[in-house]
Length: 120
Image (cartoon, rainbow, N blue to C red):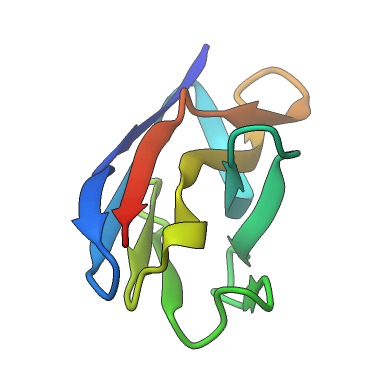
């Protein structure tokens, strides 16, 4: 089995910062792309940022210059540093990993989500 566990969400005022972390554990052979998604109430889940195994990153236009994604391949962790937060960043944030399980096939796995609320 594989588990992705997020932490670091919370309530912050506009202009503030939060740091989200996600740790993957279990029968993992290799993690390829790790990503953060978010879903606001009444909206579809959207991609926030991705990072490949060789540390190439990609960001949604709405967060470019404010959010930074990073990962530690040895620890199977990914973080999202969120600065200059805006009320429109309020959402449940989900960690995602594209990975190959030991003795099994490649697949996409999700964390349980962590709430980020930005007050105006």
